[in-house]
Amino acid sequence: MGTASFLLAKWYMDCVTEEGEAAILYFADLHWRAIRARIGSVLTAGSDELPVTRTSLGRYELDSSAEMILVAHPKLKIRGCWERDAEPFRRTMYEEKEGSVIWDCVQPRSRVRVAIGNRELIGLGYAECLRVTVPPRQLPLRELRWGRFVAENQSLAWVDWRGTHSSSVAVVDGREAALRSVTHERVVAGDAVLDIAPGISLRAGRLGSTILPGASGLRKLFPRSLFNIDEEKTWDREHLRSRNRSTKAG
Image 1 (cartoon, one colour):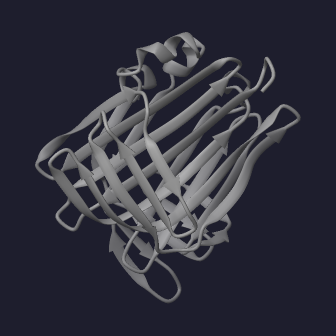
Image 2: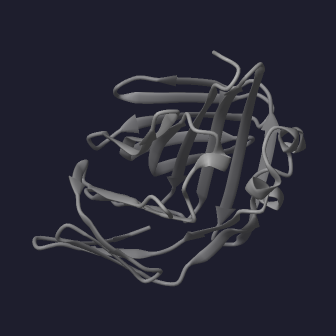
């Protein structure tokens, strides 16, 4: 791969049930020089329970096809299936001579069945893969606002990249749309308007204390600044309006 090669492939998948249970899964594969690391993480939450995150270094299985994603992580006791229910979308968010950042919105809306320990969740979800071939310390990124909305017949996902290089894009029902504005209360993409009500905080803090505390070995691979990045993740009730229809979901 060369002495300076860098590759990070990070999968994000989630599921929300009608009963109000939620799960967020991360699977990442890192190659850097002679180093290879694999990491898995799962966050679970419910209407009557506090969010819990578990993280583990080590082997996982992920098989992705055009219609389905199958995942399994023995240490975290995860096994799940994501079935595509909206057209996929891919966009290069940043590119330079040394590499690029590609956002692959594999499943803007999914039909999900996932078992986490003794719990089984069945509901709607979302799946994406971020492929990064530029070392994090070289990314011209100051702030990243990302989110997704899914309902029975609608979906919306967006990326708003801010820094010395800026790039933004939205996907409405599997089709690209101009991302016109993003705030904590509203997202406007094309002719779709997403109103966001105050919701539940799933995770807030620096990466070193949120998603990465169970993978302390990674601290030797990345600059300290990466672990000091502030992350805020919320689960909100949302109301999507367009010219022809209106839907509430989360």
